[in-house]
Image (cartoon, rainbow, N blue to C red; front, side):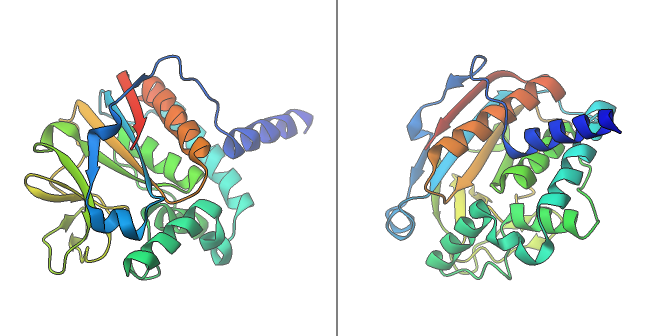
Length: 249
């Protein structure tokens, strides 16, 4: 029993606070993602945490699955379904949606949707090592995170507000109404939101160069930096991540 208790305490402490290791990371240019004036005026405090890396996409492996099971058990002890929306990071995201004119209860931020799955006993989807790590970080941190095949992004990236009837094929959902959502666009159109990623830039086993974007509506930039670092560490450990670069836009 004493050994099990020590293990439980260790897992809970890992869940509550990520380990920080910036030694393998370099900085991206802060101008990597430009912003439209409209969204800048409505949610001026919104930060985007960007992470680029070279990875090997494949099966998550037994080691990751064991870690995920332990961390999700800790999450389930920490939160309840009825109060998950009051998680500080999720609450800030929901308030940001409201400022933009989107109902967060109908178009849930992805971190909240994933957390609800866990608390309902459904677990997380198993896709591949990169997406599985992203989803676990999202649940633990409360940040909604977009994951993209960087080689499928066309030209420069801009953050804006979703337009009425703007085309967007969401992964597993078909056409998604992104009107008034925060939207990432490239020269080919919309490809990312904090509610759902798109089919066009999804991460697959053919992907070798990724971009992750953390949508941060909170007032604490230090928290975002910590989770960017933790994500980079996990990519190195579970996806052979190399040339990891981060910045906050």
